Every structure is written in structure tokens, then in C-alpha cells.
Image (cartoon, rainbow, N blue to C red):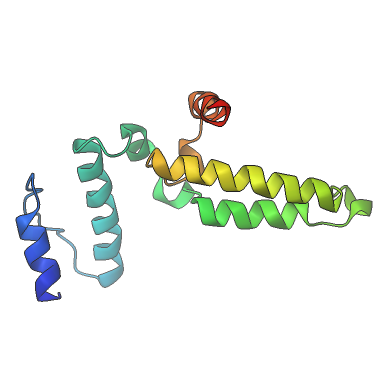
Length: 126
């Protein structure tokens, strides 16, 4: 680990403590670090605790979700795809939503629910 990164971690206020991952393989360590990161983010109030209930194999992050969405809307009109102007408009709305989600510290589509969409609509009105 880079010395300056280590010192930043030690100086963090409030201290998040030191934790053993209790694993032997590199992949298991990476997964454990991601889980520990989520737990600590919830404890610090940075993300909603609902993220801890999501199976990591079923998480759809915003980048992957956007890619799937763009593949879907870019299909030919004969296959039910929208007109190019509609696709362009949807892209702008999605860009704004992703800005909103970043400000709300959301990281996946799994966290989007009715309340998030209502808050987004209010944010757009402002």
C-alpha cells in the first residue's frame, strides 16, 4: 500500500478502525473489502442500509445498467426501437438522473425505488 494512502487512512476522522478480512484468496479479499466498505459507509451515514440486503451478485451498477438501457433503445425502429429524437431526449434525462444519484450517494439501480424517483422529480422541478 502506498505510504501516503496508509497515512490518510490512519488520519481519517472518525476512525473506521482496523479489521481482519479473515480470507486467504485475493478474490475473497477483494469481495470482503467491498462488503466492509459498504458496512462502514452505512455506519457513517453515507449510504442507506438497504444496500447491505442486496446480494452482491445481483447488484446492477449505474454504468452497467446504462449500457443495457442504451443497447435496448438503440435497436432498430422495426424492432420496436424509438425514433432518434426520442433516444436523444431519454439520454438527457438519464444524464440528469445519474447526476442526482451521485449527489444522493446512490451507487446502483437496486437502490432506486419510488421515493428516489419522487425525489428526482422534485429535484427536476427546482
